Amino acid sequence: MAFPEKDAGANFVLQSKGEWWHAGFHLTTAIVGPTILTLPYALRGLGWGLGLFCLTAMGLVTFYSYYLMSKVLYHCENAGRRHIRFRELAAHVFGSGWMYYFVILIQTAINCGVGVGAILLAGQCLQILYTSISPHGSLKLYEFIAMVTVIMIVLSQLPSFHSLRHINLCSLFLSLGYTALVVGACIHAGTSENVPPRDYSLEPKMSSRAFSAFTSISILAAIFGNGILPEIQATLAPPAAGKMVKGLVMCYAVIGVTFYSAAVSGYWIFGNKSSSNIFNSLMPDDGPSLAPTWVLGLAVIFVLLQLFAIGLVYSQVAYEIMEKKSADVNQGMFSKRNLIPRIILRSIYMILCGYVAAMLPFFGDINGVVGAIGFIPLDFVLPMLMYNMTYKPPKSSFTYWINTSIMVVFTGVGIMGAFSSIRKLVLDAHQFKLFSDDVVD
Image 1 (cartoon, one colour):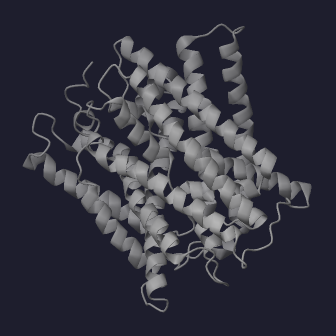
Image 2: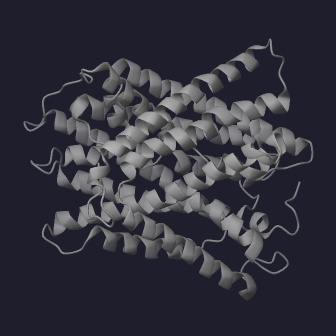
Image 3: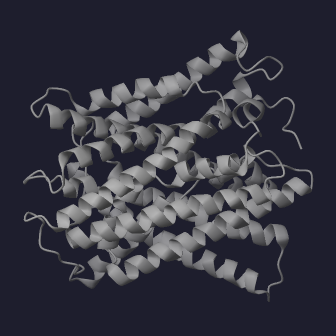
C-alpha cells in the first residue's frame, strides 16, 4: 500500500524502500547511543542484584513492547490502513481525544529533547578533545555547540530517513567500538593504583534509597526508549512485520553486547562513586587519568561521530511534519521548489536545537525526567494498550493479563520516577546556569 499521493512528508522523508537490516541499523542508532555510558550510574542507585534485574527486565519488556507495536502496525496495514507515524497510529486506536494529543506531546518532546541532547553532548565531546590538547584554551562550550550545529545543518540536508542507512550502519559499529574501548579502559583502571576504593553500598536512609532507585529506573527507561518505531517501520518496503522483527533482533543483539558490558565493567570499578558519564570517572578532575589517553580520546571521537547520526535520526519526525506542508509532492524531491524550503526549514530547526543546547547545558538531570514522563508511557504502557484495543484478546487470556500487568506496574513506576527525578532536578537547580561552560553532572 502506497503513502497518500499528496503527502510530501511521507513520500519524501519516509520513503518505503528499506530491507530488514536497514530497520536494524535505524533501531540501533535510535536506542544504542552514548546514554549507555550512564548505565554504571543507574546501577549505583540500585545495587548489583536489583540493578541487573531491572536492566534485564527493561530489555525484555521493551523488546516485547516494540514487537506488539509492530504487530498493531501490520494489522492496520493488512486492513488497508498503513500508519506511518506515531500520531497517525494513536489517532486510529484512541480517536482524536486527549490521548491522541498526549501522544503527540510526548513524542515531540522526546524527539526535540534527543536532538538538543545530541548537539549538547557532541559539543561536550569536542570540548573534551580541545582541553586535552590545549588545557588553557579560551574556547567555551557554547562555541563547540555552534560548531556541531553547523555540521548538523549540512548533514540535515540528506533528504530521507532511508538515505541515513549507511550512516546508521556506521553508527552501529561506532557503538560497538566505543563500548569495547570503555570496557577495556575500565578493566585497565581496575589495575591502576589511583582507582578509588570500591564501595557498592546504597544510601543509608530508606527514603533517599527509594528516590535514587526510582530515578535510576527512569534513566534505564530513557536508555531503552525509542520514540520513533512507527516511523522506522514506515521506511520498510511493505509488508513490514517479519522484517521489523528481524530488525529488532539485530538491535537487541547489539544491546545485549553493549549494555551489559558497559554497565558491569563501569559499576565494578567505581561502585557508588560512578558518575553519570563514565568518562568523568575515568578522567577525574582532581587526579590522573585511569586509562591510556589515546583509548579515551578514541572513544570520545567515536561517541562524537555517533551523536551526529542520533541527531539526524530523531530529527526525521520534525522534517516529515515540516515537509508535509512546505513541499509539493508533484515536483521532484530535488526541484528548486522543494529544495529551497527544505534547506531553510531544516537549517532553522537545527539552529533552534543548537541554541537550546547552548542555553541549557544540564541535560543529565533532565534525562531521568524525560524517561519517566516521556519514554515510560510511550514505550512501556501505550503499546500494550494499543495491542489490547486492536486485537481485543479475551480478558481471561494470558496475553491480556501480562499486558495489563505491565501497564499497571510501569504506570506506577513512571509516577514515582517522575517525582524522584523532578526532586533531583530541584535539588541540583542551584548548579544550573544559562550558557554555562560546564555540563551539570
